[in-house]
Length: 134
Image (cartoon, rainbow, N blue to C red; front, side):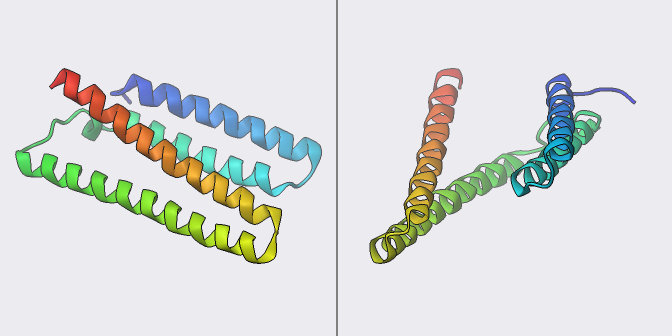
């Protein structure tokens, strides 16, 4: 097998090493949901990165302008779903905090707002990057 994308290969190996570390911590400390979830996510991410790095499809260029337009439109829709979904869920959890005064609801609000801000920062960074290079 040939490695077509070295960066994805390195990310896959790193993810699998972190998954192994999570597994070791899980075995050493006993069952904890956070370590099990991290293990599953890292295994999935590492497996996908390794598969993509060994695939020829990662090297193939876009065939036509329609592919680029579909990619652009789907990326914009995904951003809108994440940003608006986080905003609505954050607003609901903020209302839940106002009604119940449960601190976990406030933590959920802050986390969802941070995700929405991070998504906006990523969008802004990509826009600046491509404005300078295109």
